[in-house]
Image (cartoon, rainbow, N blue to C red):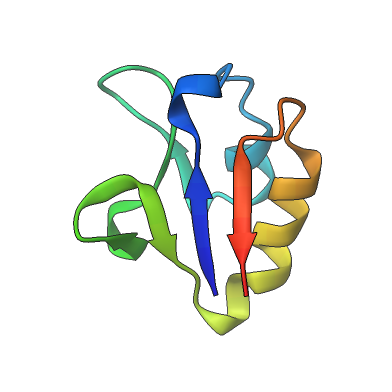
Length: 74
């Protein structure tokens, strides 16, 4: 499973990193949500590969995003 964040639309509300801190975090550079480095695809903070054990967590974070900028691809 893959996950993508539309970082330009992110409002830095923190809902995703509160729901699933193993996958999402606040960027120290711009304060926007990003994928934790361990799970980034090609060093891209907006794209990640989701481990099996975090799939539910990531889906819940995507569902809880108030601006709907998190996309999950099966």
